[in-house]
Image 1: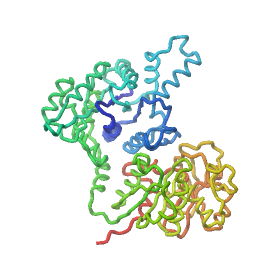
Image 2: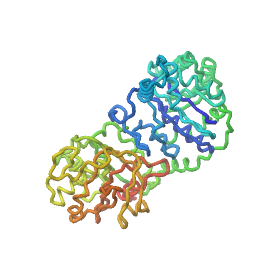
Image 3: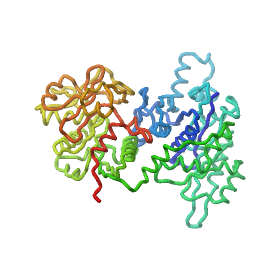
Image 4: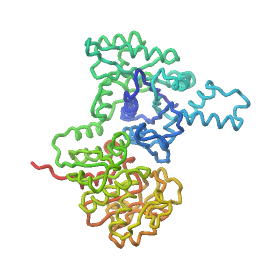
Length: 522
């Protein structure tokens, strides 16, 4: 039967509950258990498709085309597996489903209410398995927030419905240190647990986020006042490197405590690969170095490109490259300010939507091409690169995108057959190209998220000017291109960063970092 770990957050938001959940997934999987994760968010957006990157960071795309919260990306990277749209559930989706059911008469004339209809639907969204899979349920928001109440009520009932030994409750809370008095304070956690108890949930494990190690007295107080065994109070110290967190939590006995509550065997953990990746990350004997730039319009917000940052980091770790990765705002790029890119060993033009910053990306693509700087162009970044090449090399001075000029005379970027291409789609690679060599195959299935395609009607003009089409969609659109003779000049419609996992960087991003890096001078 399916086992569930329900994880809630207390005191303040932004504690890293998602990373804690992902870390637990890593630790359970290292013991041979089947693991999956689900995020339940209290906001009323149906999904993340219309959320501003400035508010919620990137939109992570799953293989089945769902546009999800960025934490789903952390889950996938940590458990080295692919999730689906069912792993991201919002209040918007739950309420929309209930309202649709009511309109279709599925409730037999009942008065539709939060309890039982909303709470039942929340539980209906839970992933269910017949085997020994453990589902880690990350409940968004902070205990005490009014919008969290239906979720807490639904998951309170879960223990009764699924069985006491099939559900464990984990509460992630903040333990502050008051520097003026030199005291560690457990009272916020006590109050947060009391809020949970008022709902009817007694936490089995408390994960304490803190900047300082937990004092023995603090553990003793929390054990007494929160009704939790002392060995189930887990220290989770602030850490600069998120890859350390699973190992820190393993040392604290986090997974073991959870397995005891679920009445499951605590098997030996095999964290060999994870430790190997971390050892490489800490290894000071780097052989190469690279100074890289991401040129996009959301660079002020790190989380807007978090999968890309993580993917580059994993590639650099694997290659023993010491790297810098700077964000440069594309909508502030002009011909006069291109000199700020001098000194960079490689440039990434990321995916995006909207006209703002597009011409800046076009300028940067031209700068990289002319200076022969390794350049990886992704999604809209690739569209900008194609527009630049059409204008600068193929004599198509009016080249543009239908997205910004529906009446463009030379639409090298056009509307595709699919109104909005999302999720995993096939790219047929051209034999003998760099892209085919990188992936070592003639076909790849990569995640897309775009409405416009690179127009095959201009392929003759582009290839005559020296561009090579290295990948096509099954419908015949250009899905990837490259420039022979350059160090690295590759544009792809898909987003390879979504495929990277800890210890398994995407091959294209790895190839880019390898090309852009240079030996460290002794």
